[in-house]
Length: 487
Image 1: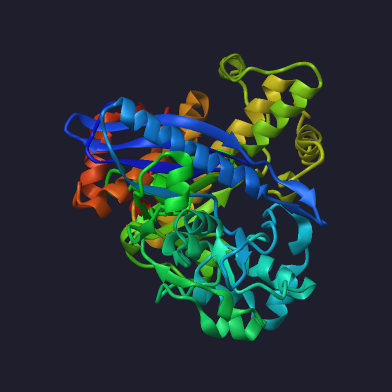
Image 2 (image 1 turned 90 degrees about the vertical axis):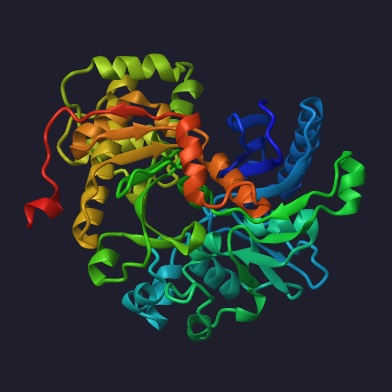
């Protein structure tokens, strides 16, 4: 680990596994080192699919212990800690700050009919005009409606989104950071505060919701009892952009006007803007207006991402025919002819008993060959994702009225050279790929801003571009911009 002063710890939580990384900007560039990985897979308990909070908090604490150990070896000190995670899920606390029950996972089916019940009270057009958020059945608004309908625990006094809960566990804070709060579909897109009238119209408990703070806010210091138990010092707890996509975008060295794709289990495809786009056309296109660092707007669409391929590979491995990723992608690249396309956002792919069966069924039902072997089915998945990415970027370009000259892919999916090239080809735009660790980098950049090490996210992005030069993929066909074509 290259030392830099000061060091920060990024806790980056995915939907089932997390990591602790140490680093930050320094004189020799941006330093970054992973020190711990841990798992906290959801499991069924008390009638719901719930997160394993004990494993989650234990993993974070072990990550902090190892982070301090790594810093000591490097002869450096740690100034702050910050947590980012997936959006929408929440924990309920009592008046003393204790967890009331284990949080329910967004993949639980409790929200099956919640959207219809909500729309019966407030039309979807009105909800979008006020919140600007894409309609997803697991959004917090529908989870909370289902929770109220089933009966909230009597002891519930505070609702904290998952990264906010993790910060509470570290320092006792009871606030919500704005980028993650914006994913709930309960935030007013214009004011950036909770939409009190929406809570009232839907009969939701506004009193549970915490104060909202911006990314970069210092929330407190790590509790002294934790410090004593872990052998660490009481560093500051800083709210980064707590929604992992917001951190990923912050850590992406975007060129002016370019779109981004945070590519992993989900793919978040969008652009940065200064104001939300709240038109009916944007709603029908599935666009969402989430908050970014500095109260920018992340105009994007959630796409079902590499979850499709990950699920298939797990099935193939269970059948005794594992498909290592690199040879699989090499074989896909050798297939010259098109194999088929599916809609990766089809609800049937959200949590099927068999992803392979659902994908083949979708191909068969649309009159396409079923792609019976792993190589051909993988090509269907990746070509379908590339086509979906291209369509989303074209929609944004058309509806926002601004040219999108290129696409920057970050996250684990940026290592997938076949998908990167397919995206360039499908969109007719150049693609930049990397850094893989954009989420952790963005988390650390915001902490560095809070510490005064860097002055702005733009300064941080310049440093990231120099430290992690992206790989470029050129499209293999020409494309005219929708904006240019309409001039």
